[in-house]
Image (cartoon, rainbow, N blue to C red; front, side, top):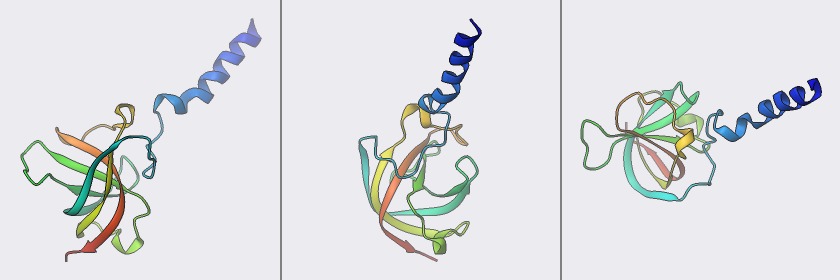
Length: 122
């Protein structure tokens, strides 16, 4: 009986990665392409939820309820500056449902992005 209980507990610890308890990896490609960004303006911010810099932006038809958070694959150190205004292009992918963290604002959407172009604006 004790042996089965030990196996069950061990299996639960190993299986934690399968239920979305880890932070999503910014360079994963498991979801369908959501949008291709083309010269999209944004602001570099450090996001504690992911312990990394992200690009915050809004759609071209902004409203009070919509904000996009982009986890960037291999963001160059020169761009890791809080508040830096940038313009970027690349492939954006939606997060899977179980990977979405607590939202800071209502209407926040999450993407990973593989950058093809990134330029400073200020």
